[in-house]
Image (tube, rainbow, N blue to C red; front, side):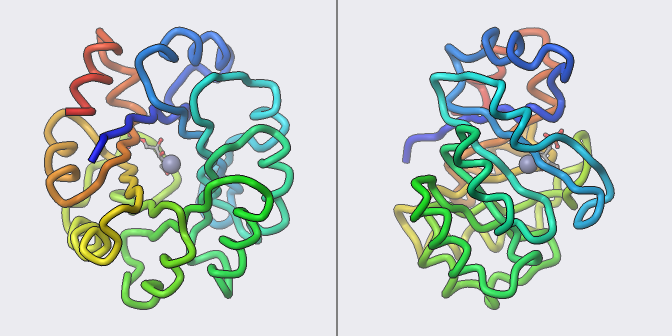
Length: 208
Ligand code: DX5
Ligand code: ZN
Protein backbone atom coordinates (compact mmCIF):
# COMPACT_ATOMS: atom_id res chain seq x y z
CA UNK A 1 0.00 0.00 0.00
CA UNK A 2 1.18 3.51 -0.81
CA UNK A 3 2.33 5.34 2.35
CA UNK A 4 1.15 8.95 2.70
CA UNK A 5 2.80 11.50 4.96
CA UNK A 6 0.85 14.37 6.56
CA UNK A 7 2.78 16.80 8.77
CA UNK A 8 0.73 18.03 11.74
CA UNK A 9 0.51 21.82 11.65
CA UNK A 10 0.28 21.81 15.47
CA UNK A 11 4.08 22.00 15.66
CA UNK A 12 4.49 24.46 12.77
CA UNK A 13 4.88 28.23 13.34
CA UNK A 14 1.29 29.46 13.89
CA UNK A 15 2.37 32.99 13.02
CA UNK A 16 3.45 31.88 9.56
CA UNK A 17 1.25 28.91 8.74
CA UNK A 18 0.92 29.61 5.03
CA UNK A 19 4.69 30.02 4.65
CA UNK A 20 5.23 26.76 6.56
CA UNK A 21 2.80 24.97 4.23
CA UNK A 22 4.45 26.41 1.12
CA UNK A 23 7.91 25.43 2.32
CA UNK A 24 7.13 21.70 2.53
CA UNK A 25 4.17 21.27 0.19
CA UNK A 26 6.20 19.70 -2.64
CA UNK A 27 7.28 16.70 -0.62
CA UNK A 28 4.29 15.89 1.62
CA UNK A 29 0.92 14.34 0.74
CA UNK A 30 -1.31 16.52 2.88
CA UNK A 31 -1.55 18.63 6.04
CA UNK A 32 -3.00 17.45 9.34
CA UNK A 33 -4.92 20.28 11.04
CA UNK A 34 -5.53 19.67 14.76
CA UNK A 35 -8.68 21.24 16.17
CA UNK A 36 -8.94 21.28 20.00
CA UNK A 37 -11.70 22.76 22.14
CA UNK A 38 -10.26 22.85 25.69
CA UNK A 39 -13.10 20.55 26.69
CA UNK A 40 -12.80 17.15 25.02
CA UNK A 41 -9.04 17.69 25.24
CA UNK A 42 -7.21 19.94 27.71
CA UNK A 43 -5.89 22.36 25.10
CA UNK A 44 -7.13 24.90 22.57
CA UNK A 45 -6.05 25.48 19.00
CA UNK A 46 -7.82 27.01 16.02
CA UNK A 47 -10.88 26.25 13.94
CA UNK A 48 -12.46 26.57 10.51
CA UNK A 49 -11.90 30.38 10.16
CA UNK A 50 -8.14 29.80 10.22
CA UNK A 51 -8.28 26.81 7.87
CA UNK A 52 -10.29 28.94 5.44
CA UNK A 53 -7.39 31.40 5.13
CA UNK A 54 -4.89 28.68 4.24
CA UNK A 55 -4.26 27.22 0.78
CA UNK A 56 -2.66 24.02 -0.40
CA UNK A 57 -2.72 21.87 -3.52
CA UNK A 58 -2.43 18.82 -1.25
CA UNK A 59 -4.98 17.31 1.16
CA UNK A 60 -6.29 19.26 4.16
CA UNK A 61 -7.03 16.75 6.91
CA UNK A 62 -9.01 18.18 9.85
CA UNK A 63 -8.71 16.15 13.08
CA UNK A 64 -11.60 17.31 15.26
CA UNK A 65 -10.79 16.85 18.95
CA UNK A 66 -13.96 18.64 19.98
CA UNK A 67 -17.29 17.96 21.67
CA UNK A 68 -20.34 17.97 19.37
CA UNK A 69 -18.28 17.75 16.16
CA UNK A 70 -21.47 17.45 14.08
CA UNK A 71 -22.13 21.17 14.67
CA UNK A 72 -18.94 22.18 12.88
CA UNK A 73 -18.57 19.72 10.01
CA UNK A 74 -20.18 21.93 7.41
CA UNK A 75 -17.93 24.85 8.39
CA UNK A 76 -14.85 22.68 7.92
CA UNK A 77 -15.99 21.42 4.52
CA UNK A 78 -16.67 25.01 3.42
CA UNK A 79 -13.27 26.06 4.76
CA UNK A 80 -11.58 23.52 2.47
CA UNK A 81 -11.12 20.35 4.54
CA UNK A 82 -10.86 17.30 2.25
CA UNK A 83 -10.64 14.75 5.06
CA UNK A 84 -12.48 15.19 8.38
CA UNK A 85 -12.12 12.88 11.35
CA UNK A 86 -14.29 12.73 14.45
CA UNK A 87 -13.55 10.99 17.76
CA UNK A 88 -15.77 8.02 18.59
CA UNK A 89 -15.75 9.25 22.20
CA UNK A 90 -17.50 12.52 21.25
CA UNK A 91 -20.61 11.24 19.48
CA UNK A 92 -23.53 8.93 20.25
CA UNK A 93 -23.80 7.47 16.78
CA UNK A 94 -20.55 7.66 14.76
CA UNK A 95 -22.13 6.07 11.67
CA UNK A 96 -24.62 8.91 11.38
CA UNK A 97 -21.94 11.63 11.54
CA UNK A 98 -19.63 9.78 9.14
CA UNK A 99 -22.50 9.66 6.62
CA UNK A 100 -23.05 13.37 7.06
CA UNK A 101 -19.37 14.14 6.37
CA UNK A 102 -19.49 12.08 3.16
CA UNK A 103 -22.74 13.70 2.03
CA UNK A 104 -21.07 17.09 2.37
CA UNK A 105 -18.31 15.88 0.06
CA UNK A 106 -15.37 15.14 2.36
CA UNK A 107 -13.69 11.87 3.31
CA UNK A 108 -14.90 10.68 6.69
CA UNK A 109 -12.59 9.37 9.39
CA UNK A 110 -13.25 7.77 12.77
CA UNK A 111 -10.69 8.28 15.55
CA UNK A 112 -10.06 6.13 18.62
CA UNK A 113 -8.20 7.30 21.71
CA UNK A 114 -5.57 4.91 23.11
CA UNK A 115 -7.98 3.63 25.79
CA UNK A 116 -10.96 3.21 23.47
CA UNK A 117 -11.75 -0.34 22.46
CA UNK A 118 -12.02 -1.18 18.79
CA UNK A 119 -14.68 -3.86 19.35
CA UNK A 120 -17.29 -1.26 20.24
CA UNK A 121 -16.83 0.53 16.89
CA UNK A 122 -15.98 -2.12 14.29
CA UNK A 123 -19.43 -1.70 12.68
CA UNK A 124 -19.01 2.10 12.44
CA UNK A 125 -15.71 1.71 10.60
CA UNK A 126 -17.71 0.20 7.70
CA UNK A 127 -19.01 3.72 7.09
CA UNK A 128 -15.58 5.37 7.38
CA UNK A 129 -13.22 6.25 4.52
CA UNK A 130 -10.34 6.18 6.96
CA UNK A 131 -9.41 5.30 10.51
CA UNK A 132 -7.21 7.31 12.85
CA UNK A 133 -5.63 5.40 15.70
CA UNK A 134 -4.25 7.74 18.36
CA UNK A 135 -0.87 6.62 19.66
CA UNK A 136 -0.85 9.30 22.41
CA UNK A 137 -3.62 10.84 24.47
CA UNK A 138 -4.82 13.73 22.31
CA UNK A 139 -4.15 17.32 23.30
CA UNK A 140 -0.44 17.96 22.90
CA UNK A 141 2.43 17.42 20.52
CA UNK A 142 5.72 15.88 21.59
CA UNK A 143 4.42 12.97 23.70
CA UNK A 144 5.77 9.40 23.74
CA UNK A 145 4.40 6.75 21.35
CA UNK A 146 2.15 4.05 22.91
CA UNK A 147 2.97 0.81 21.04
CA UNK A 148 0.03 -1.06 22.61
CA UNK A 149 -2.41 0.72 20.26
CA UNK A 150 -0.89 -1.14 17.30
CA UNK A 151 -3.00 -4.19 18.13
CA UNK A 152 -6.05 -2.17 17.00
CA UNK A 153 -4.26 -1.32 13.76
CA UNK A 154 -3.55 -5.00 13.07
CA UNK A 155 -7.19 -5.97 13.59
CA UNK A 156 -8.47 -3.04 11.52
CA UNK A 157 -6.09 -3.85 8.65
CA UNK A 158 -7.34 -7.45 8.62
CA UNK A 159 -10.96 -6.36 8.60
CA UNK A 160 -10.49 -3.52 6.07
CA UNK A 161 -7.62 -4.36 3.68
CA UNK A 162 -8.17 -1.26 1.49
CA UNK A 163 -8.95 1.39 4.10
CA UNK A 164 -6.59 4.28 4.85
CA UNK A 165 -5.34 3.79 8.41
CA UNK A 166 -3.73 6.82 9.96
CA UNK A 167 -1.50 6.94 13.04
CA UNK A 168 -1.02 10.10 15.10
CA UNK A 169 1.19 10.81 18.08
CA UNK A 170 4.86 10.23 18.90
CA UNK A 171 5.86 9.30 15.36
CA UNK A 172 9.59 9.41 14.60
CA UNK A 173 12.09 7.42 12.51
CA UNK A 174 11.78 4.41 14.86
CA UNK A 175 8.09 4.33 15.81
CA UNK A 176 7.01 4.84 12.19
CA UNK A 177 8.46 1.44 11.30
CA UNK A 178 6.32 -0.31 13.92
CA UNK A 179 3.22 1.58 12.77
CA UNK A 180 3.69 0.70 9.09
CA UNK A 181 4.47 -2.90 9.93
CA UNK A 182 1.19 -3.12 11.87
CA UNK A 183 -0.74 -1.87 8.83
CA UNK A 184 -0.84 1.94 8.94
CA UNK A 185 -0.49 3.73 5.60
CA UNK A 186 -1.06 7.38 6.56
CA UNK A 187 1.61 8.77 8.85
CA UNK A 188 1.17 12.00 10.86
CA UNK A 189 4.10 13.68 12.54
CA UNK A 190 4.31 17.02 14.33
CA UNK A 191 7.28 17.74 16.57
CA UNK A 192 9.66 15.24 14.96
CA UNK A 193 9.04 16.53 11.43
CA UNK A 194 9.06 20.29 12.11
CA UNK A 195 12.02 19.94 14.46
CA UNK A 196 14.18 18.06 11.98
CA UNK A 197 17.11 19.73 10.19
CA UNK A 198 16.14 18.46 6.75
CA UNK A 199 12.37 18.27 6.40
CA UNK A 200 12.43 16.82 2.91
CA UNK A 201 14.68 13.99 4.02
CA UNK A 202 12.48 13.41 7.08
CA UNK A 203 9.29 13.31 4.98
CA UNK A 204 10.85 10.69 2.72
CA UNK A 205 12.14 8.73 5.67
CA UNK A 206 8.68 8.64 7.28
CA UNK A 207 7.17 7.27 4.07
CA UNK A 208 9.48 4.30 3.70
C1 DX5 B 1 -2.12 15.42 19.34
C2 DX5 B 1 -2.39 15.73 17.90
C3 DX5 B 1 -1.27 15.36 16.99
C4 DX5 B 1 0.04 16.04 17.30
C5 DX5 B 1 1.10 15.01 17.13
O1 DX5 B 1 -3.28 15.53 20.06
O2 DX5 B 1 -3.54 15.05 17.44
O3 DX5 B 1 -1.62 15.52 15.63
O4 DX5 B 1 0.33 17.13 16.48
O5 DX5 B 1 2.30 15.55 17.52
P1 DX5 B 1 3.62 14.68 17.68
O6 DX5 B 1 3.93 14.12 16.32
O7 DX5 B 1 4.61 15.68 18.16
O8 DX5 B 1 3.32 13.60 18.68
ZN1 ZN C 1 -3.90 15.04 15.28
